[in-house]
Amino acid sequence: AQTVTQSQPEMSVQEAETVTLSCTYDTSESDYYLFWYKQPPSRQMILVIRQEAYKQQNATENRFSVNFQKAAKSFSLKISDSQLGDAAMYFCAYRSERTPLVFGKGTRLSVIA
Amino acid sequence: DGGITQSPKYLFRKEGQNVTLSCEQNLNHDAMYWYRQDPGQGLRLIYYSQIVNDFQKGDIAEGYSVSREKKESFPLTVTSAQKNPTAFYLCASSPGRAYSNQPQHFGDGTRLSIL
Image (cartoon, rainbow over all chains, first blue to last red; front, side):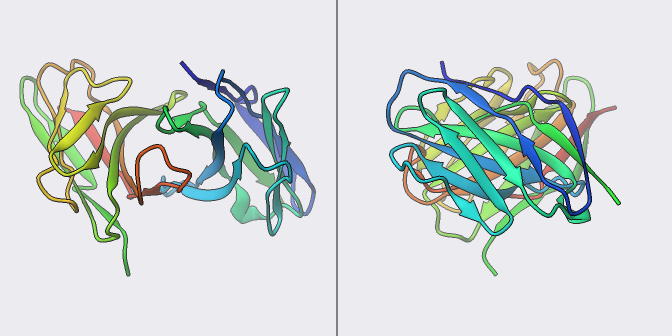
C-alpha cells in the first residue's frame, strides 16, 4: 500500500521568512498525483498546491512552491514570505489511478511575529 | 455558492447507539468520501463512492456504514460496533472518478463525542 511520511511533526518560522516542509512517499506506481492541503484552526481543509508526477516542472502558487524529486519520492513544500495566516496543519497527500487520496500525519506550522 | 455541507457540527453518542452524520454537496461532483481525523493520525479514509448506489470501503470501514441514494448526498452511520468513535469526521467530494487528478473539496467537519 502507498504510504506518505511527514517527518516533521512541528515547525516554526519567523514572519516574512521562508520555511520548507518535508514529505516522502512510497509507491511502485509511475503515474500519480501529489497534493499539499492546509488545515487552519477552523479545521477546514484547503488545497494549497498540486503536482502531477509526469510533469517535471515544479508547481508554484504565489508564495507556495514545491520541490518534486520523483526518483527520491520526495515532495517538499516551500512557503516564502511567511505570514501569520499561514499558521496551520499542513498535510501531504498522494493519489493515483488505483489509490484514493492517502494523507500523511501532518506538520503543524507556527508563524512567529 | 457551491459547496459541501456537513451537519451537525457537534454530535454526541450514547453507548450502544447508532448515529448518522449528514453530508450534502451542490457541486455536481460524482465522487464523495468520508474521512476520520484523530490527533496525530492525519486523515484516514472510511468509505468512498464514485457513483450513485455504489461505494467502496476505505482503510478503516469497520463499524461504519454509508449509502449513496442521491448524487448530492452521502450520509455516514457510526454504528455501535465502532468502539472508539470519538473523532473529527470530514466529508469530501471531487469531480470525475475517485482516482482522477482533481482535488477534493472538503466540508467543515463534524465532531463526534461519546457521552
